[in-house]
Length: 140
Image (cartoon, rainbow, N blue to C red):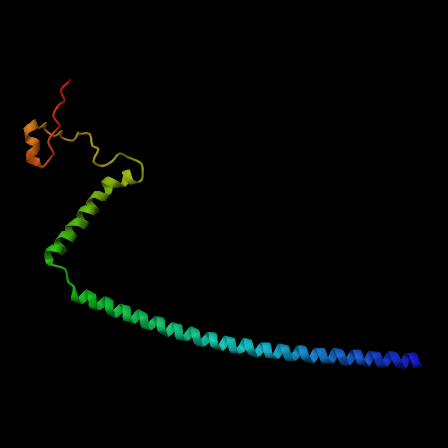
């Protein structure tokens, strides 16, 4: 009977120890849950603040962009040049397409050859801003 009483006392002490540990773990879990909850609330606040800040920045950028468009209208001659440039680019796309895809020759390499430059006389080189040719060296 004495052995049974000591076993029962030991089991009760173990049971109390387990209940104490369980209570500690439950307290730790509850505090961690509260920390996570407050962390999530802070993240939501930070996210909303960032969203509002980004929206304001986008509005400011849009306003600046609109102001720049309205203030700096290009000269009509420049607009005409730009329009003609893009029209010529659109016209030359078919000629360049095969070359750029690696399926054909360079568009400027046509069947006709480029005109050769006329040979110049030695005295005319100075007229075009070229340096003079060196004089031939004499044998000694």
